[in-house]
Image 1: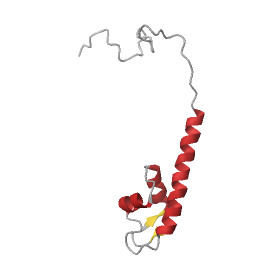
Image 2: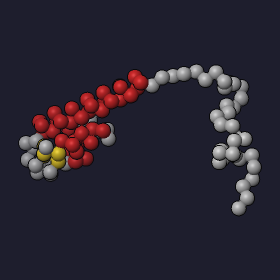
Image 3: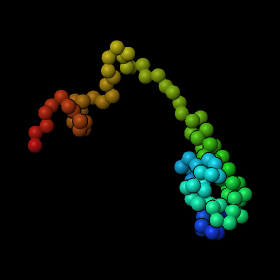
Image 4: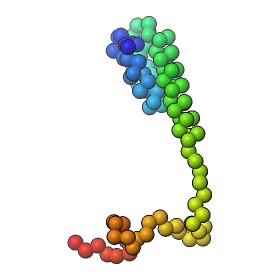
Length: 101
């Protein structure tokens, strides 16, 4: 749906701006030009922006809630942890051997 007819800005573009970090109507006007001509769209643009910002915050909270912290007991705090077995031929970045061209 078009929100700003003067600048042909849609609700999807406003939601996209919210996902990129735009949070205020002034920032929206600066980035997309919403409400910079006749100004009739400012109330609707504000509402659509608030919906977009709320959606971004809900996604962030849901993402953070799903992260689990686990202890890796096989690593020693006194030395480096081995993530891959460098003896495995599938490990391409074995820097113990010089590369020959």
